[in-house]
Length: 426
Ligand code: GLC
Image (cartoon, rainbow, N blue to C red):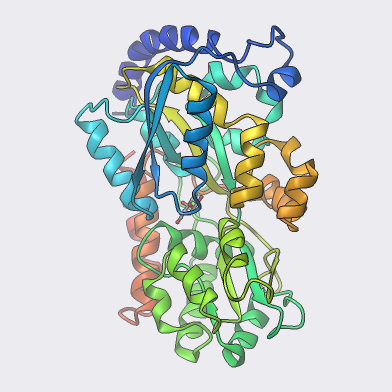
């Protein structure tokens, strides 16, 4: 199955690459210099034209519409438009796949969660984006570029990266604890910890952060073979279940995604929250704005701190009627000026190393240095075209245990069986 699919992609790829080569020739070189640094610092040539529809998750921070406005101002011959998908990563994927299966040309630029690269590329839904990244290779944080690669090619351009952080209330907690066990024990008497416990991708991330920290993993490095230490996974899941049973985490976390966790934290009750950096800018404007801080993740007791790299890459749909406009749009929003706007105004983590040195970013995000380190050293989720099925095997069973429908041991046994079946389909 693999070979057949890839064979088709190679044939399609030749046409797509020719179109893209033309597209990218029209952007990036307008300053007359081929030098990567010079390219990175200057705006691309004003060659973009035509309609460009950008389909990406909900614009919670307002940063996406700012990018569209700035692009349209810079390129009077182009008309970019934002098409917002749901907030949940899983629902975004479903909606994109519906369009792609129908060969719809509605979306030119696709906002792809870093975990979908292998699947979308394997299905021939994306154009090869190497031409955009090639000249700017050295500018991207290497771990971000890696998330856009599959099967020896680059299928998207890193747009925002991500790493989770521990938010805590400075009026309730004197200093952030150094391990998760202490976080939960303090949480119990100080208003709780909130995280993403709903039945979706966010729960896989939250579980993996603890599992990786405890020294466990899901697959081997190839992403093809299950390598789950059931003992470690059961310890981590038992800890999460106990957290809810003890009242360290409210029962309602099983309904929370990122936004629900943010709103709960901003309500003032919880002492801790696990969330991505984007909530920082919004939390600052809330009533707890002056009484919270952000810390890097603690370790699992006896283990090491671990983060899971998240984020979105921008890819060109194989069905776009304006791949040149799409390429110009992607090139523009991943340039330092725009990345700085997104990082400093909306706390969306930049993908370019240099932006982290900018005083405006450091001022807006006091944890910028920690963030860069977390992104550089963070661990990827397994890279495989069947990632969504693999992740479902994780979050479905973690969720069942959190709900009290299964014991942690039973849930981990099921997780392992279903993850194995998912991997066997590839
Ligand atoms: C964030 C991350 C993304 C992750 C998702 C899970 O959007 O950037 O990588 O899959 O959260 O909810």
